[in-house]
Image 1 (cartoon, rainbow, N blue to C red):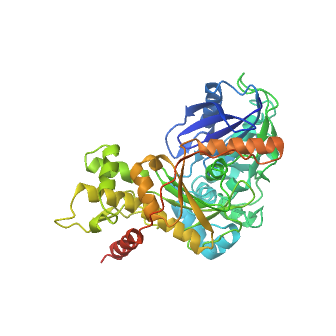
Image 2: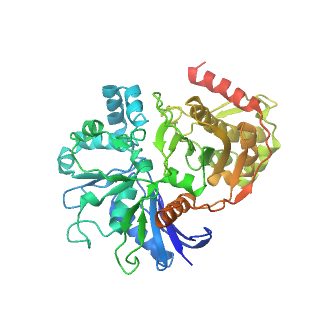
Image 3: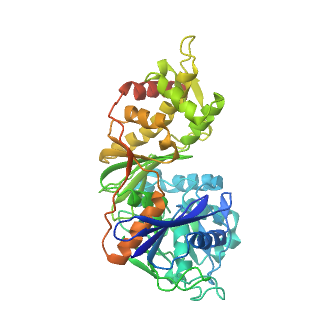
Length: 479
């Protein structure tokens, strides 16, 4: 039996799944935790990866592996292959003003035209500008800039700091893929090329080494024997960013919209054509299969459900029951769920607000229903943003922890005007990386079956989106 493996090195943890090559059937898995925080020593990821591999019983018998990871993280290396400072992660907000400065210098429309996206704090380019302005001595030492998955794949192939790795610090051996490169804000998915002028605007010079961008089926190389856990000769796939990995794991194609209800929310779709949104609402990323992956993100998703359940002093199970016992539109009660500010729309200092309460509507059932509707309406606005750029939407795949809620499932079929499918809960990012490993090994993208947990009946209720939009417009205008 031939095996392949996929890694998901996320913000919180490292997970690995090992699957049968022909059928995609899961064989074994492992995981290890990452440190908390918005900046992390990359060595912690490397340690966690080896622990996760050991937890999965090692890679013996595995023919190929690929690494998917959190996007945007800034890993800066000196000429000896050493990490210069802890990596700044996507959730580090200190680069918000550098991002705004880049937008002022180039203009949002020009940046969107050149890279598909308008930089925000999370993007690598913004973090490089922060480094230049706040740690110029470190910026001057940078010989190469990598992303988390690039660096981990490089280490798996035996490269690393001088004197500490079998193959030494060959920075030219760094490789990446289109999906992760497109999250830097100095790479053009449309042109499939780095924009060295933008890189120079961030780091102060544009001549540092950047990872070579591989195609979907290309091999990055092979592993070397390390630590008694990683055997020699395992084929390494190109790797990818986490959202692109999820799209691969879901077998998503053109017309598929993926809505992920995690701590934060994302709405992204596979598109044949690149996008460029000068408003910066939609990030014009690439996918890991040769197409494009326009994406929007919201800050308030599954946490809205737990927050309001806590307010009502009920369990999440009871919260779902309450929400489903209220009518669509919650008798006019609307929750604007910006508990932690919001990214889409860009309202970092906004707060949640509850509207439409009357003597008859002020019931726990309506508040619970309004919370689910408000959270889903925020994601619905993301779908609107994709469609406004011409992205084709034929069906919706609902994933993430929040998608396990019966209320979210049923109400999603009322909020979205698309067929809603609920895939069986799985490690889709790691699954996608495993599919990419199989692709690199065989030269063909695997056609593994996608298991579905539910397909809610179509029940679109335009009232929900219309009511929410009216209240949101009033609340944001201050009226």
